[in-house]
Each structure stands twice: as C-alpha cells, then as structure tokens.
Length: 275
Ligand code: DGL
Figure 1 (cartoon, rainbow, N blue to C red):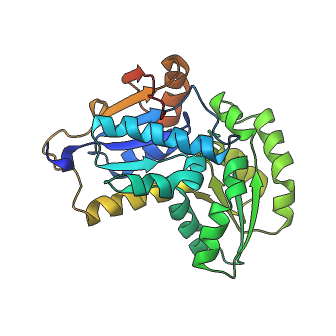
Figure 2: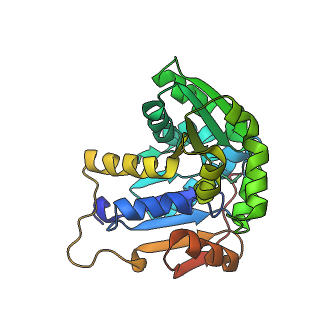
C-alpha cells in the first residue's frame, strides 16, 4: 500500500490521549488513525522511567505491526521518558507532546513565568522545563505534579465540587508565583480546562499540548509528503480503529464523551512483552 494511505498510530496509557486524537481529527479529518490505550496498565505517571520505556516499546511494536506511517506518543509521561529511545528505534517519524507544548508556552508568556502541571514522572524528568528554557533561557518555569487529576478524569469527574476543590488545593502555590501561562502537561488535563481556568483566573493562558501536537503532526505530514491522498468520502468513523488492553466498556463510555463521536471499531488486545 502507498504509505500515504497508512494510518497514524497513536498511543497513550489510557483514555487521556483521546484529547490528542480529537485534535488530530479536527485538523486532519481524512487521515486514518489507530489508537492504542494501555488501559490495563494506566497510570504511567507514577511508574519508573524503565517501566514506562518498556511499555512504550511494547505499544509502539503493536502499532507497527498494524502498519503506520507516523507514530504519536500522546502520553506526556511516555514522551518525557522514552521519546528519544523510541525515535531511534523506528523508521517512521515519531512525534511526542512535550516539544509542541513547550514551543507554544514560550511563545505565549509575556512575563516569562510559566507553570507546568503533569504527572509525577513527567515533572521528575524536567522535560517541559528543559524544553521551554532551551527555547528561551530567561523564562522561569514552575513545575507541579497533580497526580489526582488522572483518576478524576478517568472517572469522568471533570467538573463539580470534587474537581474544583482538588484543583484549588493543587494550584494554590503555583498561582502565587504570578505565572501568566500554564502548560497542561498531561493528556487528561485538557478535560479539566473549565475548572482549571476558573481556578487560575482570566490572566493565565492555558496551553493545551494536544492542540499544539496536532498542528505539529500536520506540519510533519506535509513536509514529508505523507498526507493521505483521498477522493470522495475519506472521512468518518470507519477510519478510526481503537485498541485497549483492558475491557472496552468504560473506555467507550468515557471516551465517546471526550471524543465527541462514537467509537465503533474497538478491540481488546494482549501486548507482547519485550522479553
Ligand atoms: N497519559 C498520562 C500523561 O499524559 C497520564 C495518565 C498516566 O499517568 O498514565 O502523562
């Protein structure tokens, strides 16, 4: 098959990467996509870099076995700890979520004070902070892990008193730093945008890595002449395949709300372990 017509492969630790898929669909509606949510092993954010790297290789290997033209590591944690190693091991372009988010934050800040929120693992690697400061070393970066946001979102509790109180408690200190830009450095956090902007106030710009990443994917496909070549009805749900490593029911239930469209082709799979 002409590689232009191959799908884009996307993986995440679970449901959160659907925020990235949604933006890919918005910008590239004709592209075919294969999404893998490693729902049996979520969360990645509390695991060691070695474990997350092993999972990333297993996820990538599965997507390659389906035939893809570009790989997206939609998970911030996996992008932070394993992007370079995965990139070195494959022959297709690999795009993560850190660089696009960092570029957007560096461009957005006026007072050069940027906050980054993410999982424990993402914050520990300093991946966002290094990426932002390598663009502009005068920017001060304040990073904060907000691990409870992931289970809240997985549960579908993206608004209401529990979400607000959790956000208020986490963000109190970072708000005091006077940041004007906040990077949502985790796949799940765009789903809490309403709550986060309420807590941070109108003076703080929220950077959604998912939107920035989709723009980067489009640019990479254009640059490498890999855009899908479709005539007629190339769009629609038949272009989207979903795979999960645990039972699909909850993924469908919460996922359809995130995605704003139905998830019709979905299959539970067993990933082959590396050893
Ligand atoms: N996908 C992860 C991330 O973006 C969040 C969920 C997890 O901890 O696995 O960092």
